[in-house]
Length: 289
Image 1 (cartoon, rainbow, N blue to C red):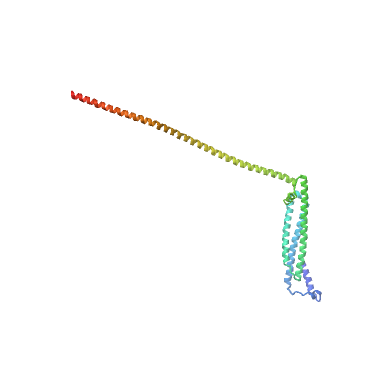
Image 2: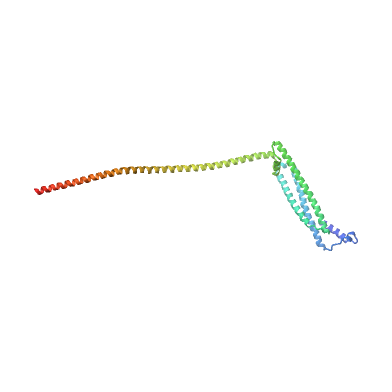
């Protein structure tokens, strides 16, 4: 507000000076004072808001520099998370500032009044401040990445590993810089992975064993049923053979029965004839006597 009052007082002095050069060559705009002052106040409010973001960006840059300078940074996960959070916040501030500057640029006009000149001046100054802050932030990021890459190469030499530049970049992007610890962790992770594979294989073999046991039981039941069926087939075959034998012996028995029946009939006929003859003899004897 103090800046606004100072600019307004200067404009009033310039516009109200009689016989001055500015008064003689520039036509004074007869706009109402209140809207003009409100427009200038809006410009300064917008500029103050953007400069507050620039100040936050500078603060994040300094915070990242202090965090990385801490001797325990490479082993302290909390410091690493704070630095990563500050970097994320700075990226968000950069996006907001870029959008605000583009929006502010669209409001600039080609007029030569006080508001337009103030807007252009504030835009140029704010953009320069933002560019300088962003350059310092990017320089810090490049410095941090170079130091991390140097540390990574040093650890690679100490561990006698063969790592390509692409793999180094991938390690930097994944924030895996403690190779001594990572080797143990990698071996542990590999052992756990192998153990998980063995456990999965064991479970698969157990399921396969259970399935084979079910198949074995099924075949046992099938063998039992086949044995029962064979017994039934043997019984049917036995009774069929018995029936065949009975059919064969039945013919001879029928023949014997027929012969016996014929003989019996002949015996009956002979007996009847004998009885008739005897009766006739008795009758003749009785008649004759």
